[in-house]
Amino acid sequence: MTTSAPSPSVSFADLGLSQPTLNALQNVQFEKPSPIQAAFIPLAMSGVDCIGQAHTGTGKTAAFVLPLLERLDFDNRAVQALVLAPTRELSEQIATECKRLSYSSMCRSVCIVGGRPIRSQINELEKGVQVAIGTPGRVIDLIERGCLRLDQLQVVILDEADRMLDIGFRPDIEKILRRCPTERQTMLLSATLPEPVERLANRYMKSPQKVDCSTNGIAVKTVEQYYLTVDEDRKMETLAKLLLDQRPQQVLVFLRTKRGADRLHARFARKLPDVAILHGDLPQTHRDKVMKAFRAGEVRMLIATDVVGRGIDISGISHIINYDVPEYCDDYVHRVGRTGRLSSDEKGYAFTFVTRDQGEQLTNIELRIDTMLPEYRIPAYESARPKEKRAEWTGGFSNSPNM
Ligand code: AMP
Image (cartoon, rainbow, N blue to C red; front, side, top):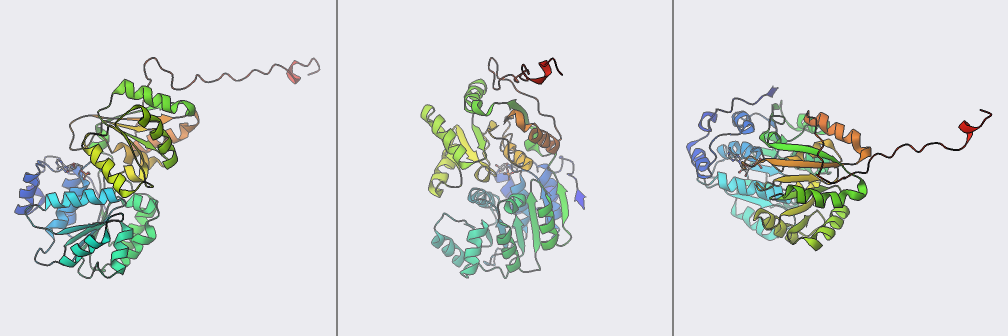
């Protein structure tokens, strides 16, 4: 069953949240639930398995964290909830949101991700935590070492479920789910619901109920989206022109490949001081430093690949530039969800570079978002050469008097 979002006039108190949670919400100055929160929280609190379709930036973290906090027994220090996310950055963001929202309820949580010392994560688990949040690889490692015990688990949450299956986490996730008690609540959050996610949902969830806020999500509504026709060999130059034309407050530039991102970074970092790069081959310490500087506004232009760029919640991002058309049109939705965020009043802008032979990919994106993207032209600049006229046939048979 799919439920649509209830009226936005609903308050947090109407959702049946407890007083300590309402106090925490007041403390973080969340005044009203977002559509996904208003629809998902009551369903999740009823204890059924549920799927929430929503983009990052629409308040989906709180949508699952709040019901999760409501069902924990704080006198028990066994792990009662497990949240799985595809990237370290996203896991850490969830852990931070969990801490903020459990302010008055003294919830103990640990973030278990690779690239961080395992010892301190083990120490936290030994001291006792109610919520474990992390990426599949490190979670499995800690389960296998006997440090993460799931026998008292009540809730499992898969965030960005579509991406977890995309990047080959599927066997890991299935392995973890098999270790969880069968009597549990499973929640799944995803911006999109492609076939493999639905199949997994049906295999590991009991009659899941669905809430779809993916098309009316605030994130997409407040973003002005355009495409630019660009010649492949003019992309770098076009990017420079577009930056001059737009003068973004903060910009996230997406590329398909790490090598492409490296090349672009090398070119721009030479000329601009506040440019940084983020992709999966870079060491965690570098990734942390970059994220911190980007959040602080010290980095104004971040060049990233999809895997690392998604899920990043930074309210200052004013512009998204898809330097390469995303490989899958669902990635477009994820990338563009990085701007026009819930916590920001500012409008966001998204520009997608499309070469002449990528018309079909542009159409697929437009079908996916159910919107025609207008073309943007940078004043006094041609990002693509005029279409070459078909070369005229001057010699040969047609001129032959014998034909
Ligand atoms: P998320 O979609 O979970 O990444 O959330 C995006 C941002 O919106 C985060 O900075 C949240 O702290 C913030 N946020 C979530 N829910 C609300 C709300 N109801 N009111 C105001 N801000 C919110």
